[in-house]
Image (cartoon, rainbow, N blue to C red; front, side, top):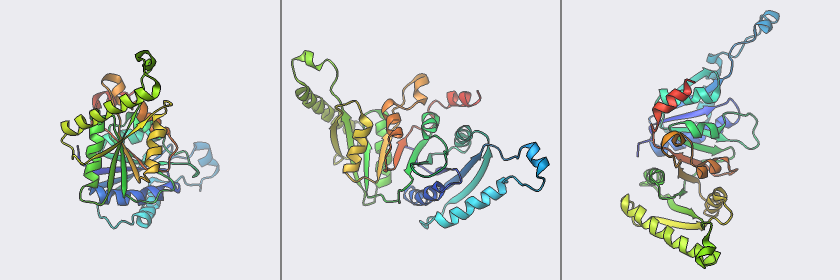
Length: 304
């Protein structure tokens, strides 16, 4: 698992910025990150020509004035006391495209984005970024104050689940943080042809999941004391099972892998991860990706 040394916060010059900066100040302290980029993308920094002619004294917000405004918020909200290099960048163009390019140019290890409910401003769509960006992603709810006593890691025992567990273990190492894994399993269609009812086959599937978990721990040399809970997905809604479990646990963060696949589909999130990102929740969500996977295809995509 790579160390998360370089963070990028996507800002939109709204109230959400202060929440993200304050959260990231503590996250960076936990991760011992070395550098944080504060990036805002304006669709157009220039005033229309006819407007400039009619109102010659009217000035468009410059990148310098925006940077100064962001710096004032940083001075106010960066309250963890953690000292690292901070860089403010103002870009122009399509927000999602520019952010994705900047992630690659600066070799970002993790992006931090807001998950809005009531606050104004459209910002950048997390689903689009999460699908394509070759970096891990942290989604922070608008009303969340940083606290990290309990973490829940969603696992399906894949290589991407391995990355998620590794990251959670790295964050919690040496700290008083409770770590619980959760596996959401389901009963396959056609179970009735076996002669067993739904509940009976659910018990069988849970037993198989426990075996898979034990193999997962041994294969990856994870601590034997890792706790994994098993939750039945009885209505094909894994996202609400994951968040429901995390809420019951009073978790302060959910961690999961992107569950990428080979070929073209590997730059997209797995179906479960995508549903979890869209799920309306007040718990911060970390999506852990394998850095640089399919980078050549991504660069070609961004040039289109």
